[in-house]
Length: 391
Image 1 (spheres, rainbow, N blue to C red):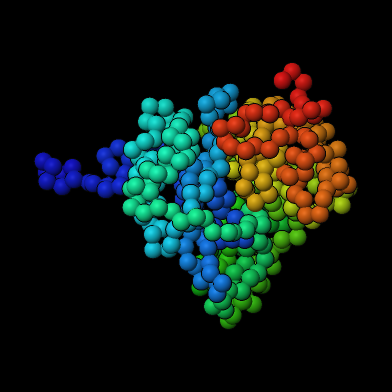
Image 2: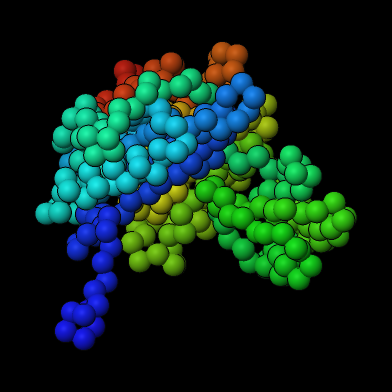
């Protein structure tokens, strides 16, 4: 406000009071779901025609990761597919979902203020009808699509314009100089000569992007000099991610970024003993239940409760399509290794062709599948002989 209301700062979509809580949007291009589109408030899944041309999007709504320990009114949720829209209508769809949340979101209780709770409170059909009313058209039926993974593809690729892109493995996104890994110095040296861009991935890695043919040998040399070209890690490590937690985050209850690599060192040995070194298993860790590393859609995950103590979760979908579930409410490292040792061995011996770890633990009876966020607590603690004592 300036000069007696002569000028006002007006936001036409947010309105005077903004949104009840944060609002995330992601775009995924099948078969890669490397942005975890179902974990976002709104998602656009790109749909192409037979000629590979973009014709529109399948639209998802209602994803979100945040939870509060011991508060069963809070839960993670994967987004529902509302339907298909053409490319020219995408912006109107996003605006209509946003304003529906603006006008119907819970402003009294911030722990239940995200879009995921609004949809469950209104009911999916009623929510969809309200969005369609605001946007002025009905969604078309969703188009077929197929995801294969939510893990980054590391190494070099060449695009249709003849430019090259290299995805570096930056464990948990930490760029710093360490003995034998001068990543910070290396990236600074690359930046001095690179004429393209640097891009950050949703899995905390980094892409040296838009490298022209004339620059390729120089960039390759610098990547090799600073060991930024090394992607020869286990499938488990390449598929892992962690939030920052201690000492940076004031909400942390346990270690995450600094501890997950240490835990993976030990779980890797179990995988290698069972011939699974190169098999991708999505493992994630956070230092608190807010879900910044998207642990609730990992195949196996750990959520901090106190220093050295974690929730253990199992059964997430490999490409982010299904929530996992709490398997144990309080585990320490010796317990984690004691649980995963026999489980991974059995997976190596009994898995079906193409079966992912998250699917196997459900089929093998360790945990039941989570069918919806609001049912997340049902079946927590394991199934049958694997059920946690006292639950």
